[in-house]
Image 1 (cartoon, rainbow, N blue to C red):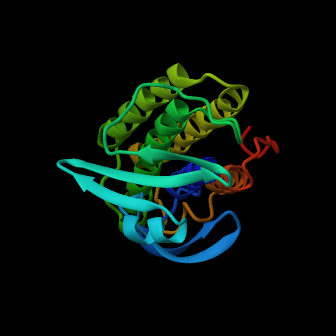
Image 2 (tube, one colour; image 1 turned 30 degrees about the vertical axis):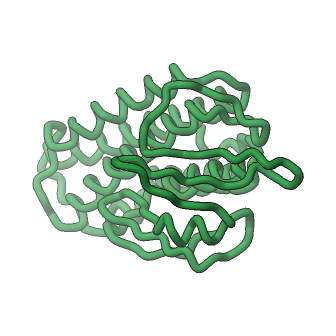
Length: 228
């Protein structure tokens, strides 16, 4: 159960559908089962109600000072529980299934969230005709670069290595997409507000995101070539 939950978190936060809408409300699906847990997207990040999530997975939620403990049963016949707290951990503890280590999973979530913010900033600038420059997007690129390095350092399993390569491809493709529109604006080229939605490079990026989401949902690492 805990492995499935962590894969679910990877799916929800990474998306990696790189949503183009700043604020969205979505339903949460856990291991193929629809739930009543709402998912709200705000500025490229996804949020869930922890109490509702705990109820959906038969977990428990408790508070102690500045920490939040979220526990779910590991599986039938095992009385041990796995607890996730708000304190970060540097240990890369391997998960038995689907093979992602906890350290890598946490780092990948942070990288994916930053990529979503980068994409959202680019999409917002194009859709609203805001000034678009390399300097304006530089903080997103810099943070994504840092988080990608942290994800690389956390790799410890074969699944980690495979997922890291795809995550790295998303980073590179996001950079190319961003550079393309910055160059267009620098050359005073007219950019239609809906140009990103009709851009084949952006569509490939979205297809890659759906592939990563499907991989996370199934719990199996499968490279279908869409992120190359």
